[in-house]
Image (tube, rainbow over all chains, first blue to last red; front, side):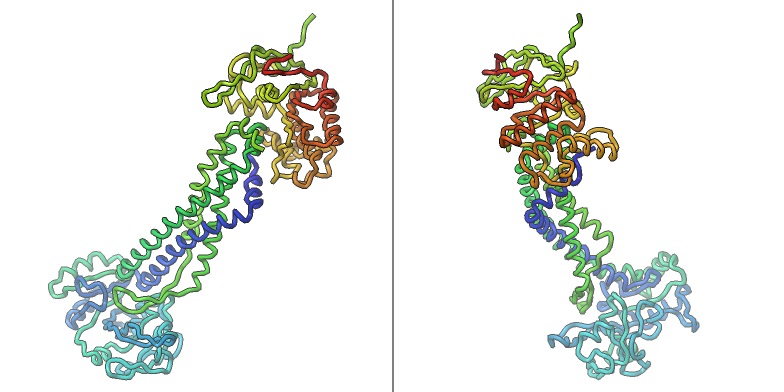
Length: 388
Length: 226
């Protein structure tokens, strides 16, 4: 049987100030590590959850986003007539031809302007995107200057609330409804009638086509056919892929920034843990000698000190994850660099991120504790017992 | 007539330490027999090799040459791991400064040597309670060393030395850090271990009063037994 676990645990408790300070250093690093992963997860969920796997979005070939894309009416008609497009309850294709334009609105809190996506669409959009729910008011009447606002727009932008009016494209548009799109990017959009918005913005073409597949498995063949049709010059992507592509650049930036910070900080935390554990070994030399004299072997001493370092890392890990979990109450409002428009996302803590963060903390503890533990295990009994 | 072999048999044992380029001899061809059930006091000036001899018998240090058998086992060729397990079963330690683990209670300190045996939890508990009762500290089992007096701590250390039922108890200046009254109590306990439990006690001491309690007193000077 190894050295009792209580020995490692109580020694940490005995030096609680040192333990807390060292663990706090590790907790900070774990906090940054977890926050980075949570931000990536939040960003990913917001953008990827915006799409559905069995929806296909078509944009102009090599357009990175809907904003840069143009789909002519004739091209839209070709796609709409494809048998792979699902048919809705009313017998009409589950396909929506949308216009996406960027406008400026003023923020309620700071009065500063920000880019907002205006989406010209129709009521089929709600069938294609079940995550979007009207939570107040009604949908715009076709042929009217009415819009519905995503919950984030209604809350944060002047004129975005129910019953208010926003002005763009030389017209006043009344907000007749507010929709909630969960954590998706639609939450930061204004939706109105496609034909009205095309007329107002004097745009003769759509930005994108989105349709539901009759069967999700039809996608690969359909993509090949559509993309090789010389009349179309369009690219077909699953909606999930499209939004994942949108998050790629920002996710990569956040990952590199976060992980660079984490690596630098973790070196400091590992050194901190090492100093603490070296001090622990130095202060307990005589105890180590006694345990060895009583019959505990070098590996058993090594395990006891590694357990102590792992506990230290564990405390730091739990503290860091607990601190990072509070970030879930925060929402980040930022510019989507692909569409140059405002969108919101949060930090999301998943069990996997919590486990990865704890594991990271334990690895830091282990790296910090291994050399001091080896020193403890290497001592000769007689020399250790001489230290009083 | 048959003679009983000694519990500890030492022949021509030598030990030296290296300090830089210098080799400092500590024990020089020392021979000694210690029969089972003896209470032996080793005396001598500082640096005479008393503690080194004790450490060699206890298997926590290794000799340069010579023969050292304990209970008929030649302990010199044993590997470090074998020696550790051998100590756990055959040697009880009592130190001058008690060497209790401060973060463990008296009970847990005494239980330590039993963690190296196969005894189940309940039997370990019974053993620990028995020996704590023997040293008169049954009511202090939940106390941490810092909550006990020096004499009480040394009695806990004696309980720890006794709990695994070793044949030999080595005591290095067991009364060196105690007041006269506590020292008396500790020495009485050591005598009891010899008389009532048949243990062999090998004690290093500077204290003539402690040596008086021993059956045999051997003087060491410059690594040689007088």
